[in-house]
Length: 236
Image 1 (cartoon, rainbow, N blue to C red):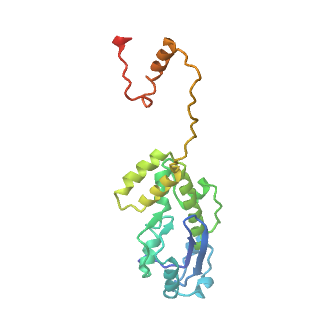
Image 2 (cartoon, rainbow, N blue to C red):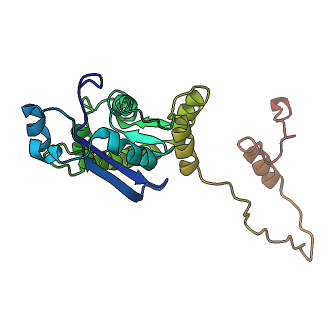
Image 3 (cartoon, rainbow, N blue to C red):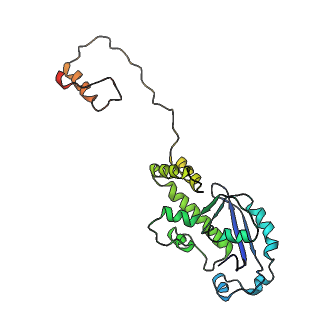
């Protein structure tokens, strides 16, 4: 589909908080002002008479603009598809855009196929048979959460390297990897085990040379205990 020649017949969006909990949804049919191609009817299950009674995009745009506001945009292939249609309709959006297709290619390099339906199958996410706007947005939301959980399970050194490489760029995912690293790295703690106080013996006892030798030999593997210790073979 081309934003310069094709028209929108349905809009669907999901608003969720940083924890992934859905807060609100937006869904409406749109009158494209032209006949709906048969292949689109088969793909979406939307009949021509349904959109004939729907509002035009000019009437939908202000409500949709209010819904998306300046929130980050998350979606499947939004860079190559959705955002072009939003721009054609005169809508603005946040510069922060997370494309789940792009993230899936990065996190699942051996998957082979990265369509929304393929990612849904990979993560065992149920997806309706027809491509409806709200259902696709809901599926993209679940795929994003699944990808985020997958990223959070990566070893901290991998996340640290990804965050380091992305930090110097304008890549939208740079903050994402930093957040995943913070979640994966436990916060430092100052709690320490209580140390029992030393209690002197009532009577002194001689120290066997073998005990001293055993102690000094153990320092070979624990330089942190006595940094000044230096082994000198010629004195052995």
